[in-house]
Every structure is written in structure tokens, then in C-alpha cells.
Image (cartoon, rainbow, N blue to C red; front, side):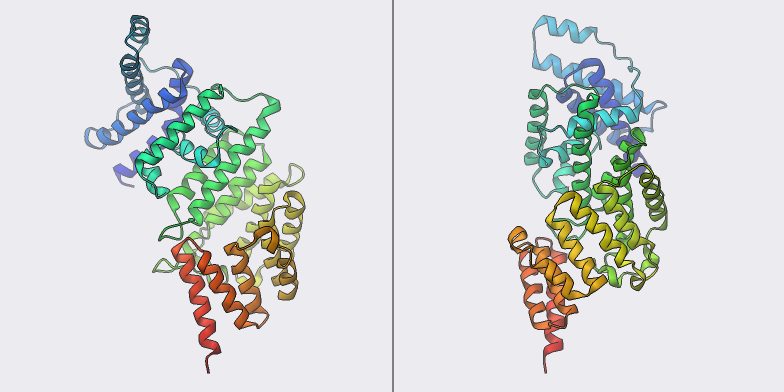
Length: 408
């Protein structure tokens, strides 16, 4: 590992501890987060050239505290604030355990008053330690636009009166659901990028996994936290085989399974097994179990589609989510025949309308039913609605392949 990459990893691990120490001591999440970012940038610039300090956490807290004091002095020239700022000690405060602060920060950044579009970038900056520029690049917007989004998110949290503490028992599970939902969306954006030239963004999916593991470290007995981490690592284990040398999509049926990450699979399977021992399976546990069934199959032909269909049946009853029904249709087609899957899809037109995935799944099932002309229409319809260039290319390639087969 290079010095630069090692520094980046350490800074991301220390970011929530620095921010937690500042907020505990000085309050004002927004100002503390800005100061923490400045300290992280300073460390990323200085440490590779000057060497890593003996106490990296203490160094970051001292620098961030100085930035916070300077900002307070600039923002308010009144003598009382000057005296208060001057009285603050520049010695590194004793931070709370990093895992605890990470969890509290996650609850703050995923506050119910925020939309996922605001919570995700704020989480990446405050908890993940990413710069505004890095986040803006990931989501294909300008740095100024992302800075405004993050600033508004912090203002919303402040207006909501959020405090730097774990929510009470009554609110804990609901707030935890918000945290898990944000991590789930972040992972999905990394694993199947919604737009742009690349099929995946491993930096985003990797960050979701890292943060998910941190939450699991704080709540090791929560089965849905374990389920989400299992879902992410079991899915991400297949990423090395999901694209070819040119970066184009390789469907599950054609993937070289020797390229799957066996360490991630082992981690995910162990999490699924332990979580399943703690009572009824929740939404993320069921999705993790589906991916476990895929990852256990040495060949595509060995996939236990009956088990997967049963899991999707349970998940559909639990969530009533039409996207789950779409996945159930695909599993039903593999387990019981394409006509069964197509009959399930017929009931989704009103709910999903012109959704790209509905067209793509229907195209696949029509091809299985030996209806290539109808499949071509659906593949082209899916491609027309695809926002990711790699997915669009794959769908058009399937349509072209079937067209060539139909040509005399």
C-alpha cells in the first residue's frame, strides 16, 4: 500500500472521531464539521511530505480546534466570544470511542428531516471523511452545487434541534432504519451507477460497506444491521466478474465465478447465519439470503431458484415493494418457467409503468419463451430508458444479437 493511500484510509477512519470530539466539546455540528474537513485536508497535504505525527488523532483534533477558534473569531468580533474562544484549550480532548461517535454521527447525518439526496453526501463528508470535491465528482455535479447541498443539510439538522447523542429507545429503531436506508442507497449507487460512463463506482460501494461495518461494530446484535452488511459484501463479492476487460456488463449467467471475492462471500455467509439465529428475518436479511443463494452456487446451473423464489415471496409479503415483485417474477421464471414469470410481470405495468428494469426483465423472459421479436422490442425500450451508458450498451447489444438471429 502506498503512503498516500495509507494516509487516506487512516484519515477516513479518524474523521468521525475528530468530529465527535469537537462537537462534544464545543457544540455546533456545522462549524465543527467544517473545521474537521479543513484539518483532514491539511493532513492529506502535510503528512505525505512531512511524515505522519506520533499521535494522528491528537494532531487532527488540535488543528481542527484551531480552525474552529479562528472561524468563531472571524464570525463574531464581540469580546465575549473572543474571550470564550481564547479560553478554549488547544490540547487534544479525550475522544469518545470511535465506533460510538461514528454511530452518533450516522444518526445525525441521516436525520429524518433530511432527504436521502441530502443525507448521503453529508454522511460521506462528515463520517466518511471525503472532500466536497470527491463527493461532487461521484455524483456528477459541480463542487459548488454539492457544497450548497451539504450546507443546506447542516442547516436543516440545526433547525431540527438535533443533538449529539444517541436517540432514546423509542426513536432508536426508526432512526436506525433511516441510517440503513441511506447506506443501502449509497451502496446501490456504487454497485449500479445510475448515470455516466461506468457501470460501477467502487469508491461509493466500498464506502457504504466500510460505514456499514462501523455501524455493525456498534450494534453487533442487531440482525438487520448484520443483514445489510451481509447483503452488501455478498453482492460486492461478484463485482470483479461483473464487467469485462472493456468495462462492459457481464450478466450473472456468464460471469467467471472464480473471480468472485471468496473472503467477502465467507464474511457475508457468516453474517447471514448469525443474524438468522435472532428471530424472524427482516428486509435486509432476506435480501442477503437471496445473494447468499447466488454466491453459494459454483455454477449458474447450480443456483437454487426454488429457494430464491421462496425468499422473494417472503420479502414481497413483508415490503409490498413492486421492485421485489419484479425480482420475484425473474426467479419464478427460472424456477417454474418463463410463462409464470411473465404472468407476474403483467400485474406490474400500472405500478412501474415505463421503468427500465420492467422492460429489461420482460425482454429476458420473452427470449426464454422463444419470442425473439417481442424481446427485441422490450430490449430496445429498456435501452431507451437506461441512464447508465454501459447498461444501455448491453441492452442494445442483446437486441442486435436477436435481430441478427432472426435475419435470413
